[in-house]
Length: 263
Ligand SMILES: NC(=O)c1ccc[n+]([C@@H]2O[C@H](COP(=O)([O-])OP(=O)(O)OC[C@H]3O[C@@H](n4cnc5c(N)ncnc54)[C@H](OP(=O)(O)O)[C@@H]3O)[C@@H](O)[C@H]2O)c1
Image (cartoon, rainbow, N blue to C red; front, side):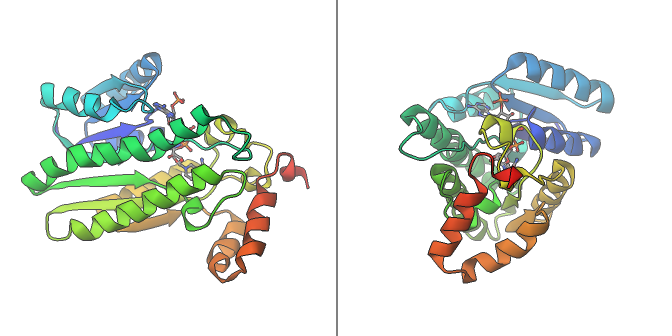
């Protein structure tokens, strides 16, 4: 494979964009998701349109052996991964005490545990070779706590902190780690997390330029990229560290209340 990118959540809103961008640059792909049919369809379309090599790995990323299975499959098939894009993730509206153990633990597994394991497995190979790049998808949710999505915001705070630290540790190795922090985008994310009628998603943006900004940032070895802020987020986000914490928590809570889009 040449210049191969492994993308988790490849048939989702942002994942599809990463796959298309990389394919249009002539790079090969390893597509990872849990639905084999959707992976096969995406792979067939990309091969047809771009004449590239595309492979698929069907795996549930909430399982603790998922990362090892992905890594082993790449090793066995001699698929050398030049770009690791940890994109899969999900949120979910609701009070912490009302959400189930399973909902929140699988979120931690998909948003934190599996991407961390994938970095642990793929990065040493990249460093040994002296080249390779990681793009971890976080969120603007990383920069503040998120009442009514308490666990989701915390998973993204982890992802940003983890990736920025990696960026420094990898200095002078030829390998880079970049974190992408998107604002609210119109993908499958809002409906998967029952957030479609919240004020936060009332003006969600197109994911295509967000994916391009993240991809460019990864290619340039940037530490962090923030992209896709809607009008109000452009003001709210830089102001948020200056706001009294209790006032900030009330604002985030109100933005994520069911039906708040109509208010
Ligand atoms: N949309 C936003 O507003 C927004 C904002 C900031 C950050 N983000 C982040 O952007 C990333 C991409 O999300 P998106 O907006 O493109 O949402 P999306 O359209 O819902 O895509 C999410 C992808 O992750 C996959 N996924 C979820 N759970 C999985 C599991 N257990 N095993 C395997 N695959 C799984 C989904 O597959 P299935 O369809 O099979 O579930 C889907 O392909 C996520 O990390 C998200 O947190 C999104």
